[in-house]
Image (tube, rainbow, N blue to C red; front, top):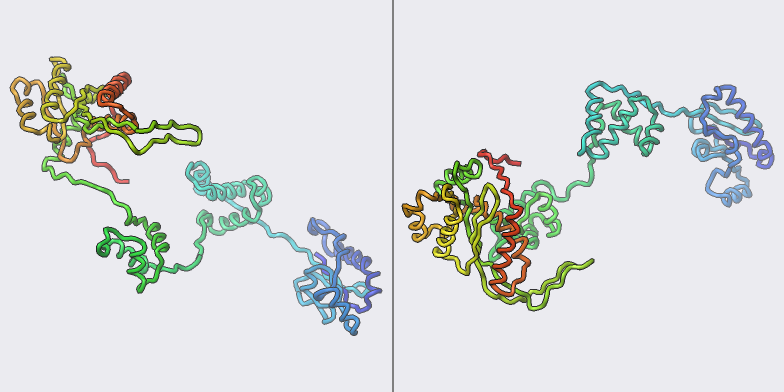
Amino acid sequence: MFEITIVRPDFKKLLKRFRLAVREAAKRALKDWRADTLPKHFKLGAARRYGYHKRSTKYQNRKRRRGGKPALVYSGAARRAMIASRGEPQSTRLGKVQTVGGIRIAWEVSMGRVAPVIELGAEERRELEARLRARRSEQRVVERARIVLLAADGLSNHEIAERLSIDSDTVGKWRSRFAGEGLAGLVDRSRPGRPLVYDHDDRLKIVKTVTEEPPDPASHWSGRQIAEVLSDDVGISRSQIWRILDDLDLKPWQTRSWLTSHDPQFWEKAADVCGLYLNPPDNGLVLSVDEKTGMQAKSRINPTKRPRPGLVERKEFEYRRHGAAALFAALDVHTGEIISETKTRNRSVEFISFLEHLDQVTPVELTLHLVLDNGPSHTSKQTRTWLNHPDRKERSEVHHTPTHASWLNQIELFFSILSRQLLRRGEFESVDQLAAKVVAFITDYNQKAKPFRWTYEGKPLKTA
């Protein structure tokens, strides 16, 4: 790098000697240092650029007319390094300073930084290669691992940057960090960032407020109410309150219903039902029995518009009711087939009639194992009398689910399928049409029926 300063005030004569002085300075530089140590980007043609030292040409001309001694300086580095009219260069980092034909010329040869050599141990290489293979590794982690591995193979920063299509400064940064800190250097360092406006104590006050009872007559907290309660103590807006609550995964606007079974024999009954699912008895038929009530036959006043590109199906809110039907169904747990009957009412009489139908369609040599919940028609005196008759007691055996545990009854899975695929969006002009479509659906279902895969293993579920 050459820095050239004209120190004589004779402006016209110096311009004639300018090019000759630069050439002589270059020759002297080549004598002092070998040519292969000079930077590749060194060009003598750049010496043709020159300009005034201070501010602007207008300022320099005005100063020269008033008797001043303007300085003509080549290159921005020289402008900062020396002032011609005030003596020697201010910077002492230059290699040499010489005066040729009234022109002071300073030059130095700057060498680039040497990249640190990367040597990987067996454990470090194994860890970096594992980061490359992992499917869930972040892209920045994969990129840094590749940089280190390529550096260990002897590639330069420039070669690595070209291969990975990234900047060479990025390569140098992570190469240097790994050389100094190892694998720990490839982790992002903590950044100070903006200090929290609301500190830890303020957040605890928000949590404390939200988890307490809301003021009367409200049933739950709102952002406005929380802001009003904390206005004197914290002074926070409701929008900021929602941001903090979202960060803490605290959602006072949501609710979830739950129900506890107080059946003293809960575990014994549950184990009995699950045991039938896993290990059916010999010469026995396990049937999951229940009824789906309140199936309404409804039709829309105006016809439904089917979906088309850009529009979903559109259905009018107003409808006509034509009555309701009840479906009595039994699921063969180990084949997946459905035995069903449709009726207009749901009483013990209809349920006993369905049990008689099951008794008729089941081969005589098989014992019926009926899984029932605790619905009124299942536990009524009339139903218990029918089940406890001596002729039927040997033929069938009843297994009740615990109270509030009808989810153990597998027929509920089929009822869910029926609701989603037929009842929820179906339109029926009469109860008979509804019953006919339900029977047709079950007939089609039985042609490709498969048992539900029961995953209970008799062990408590593991928490996530």
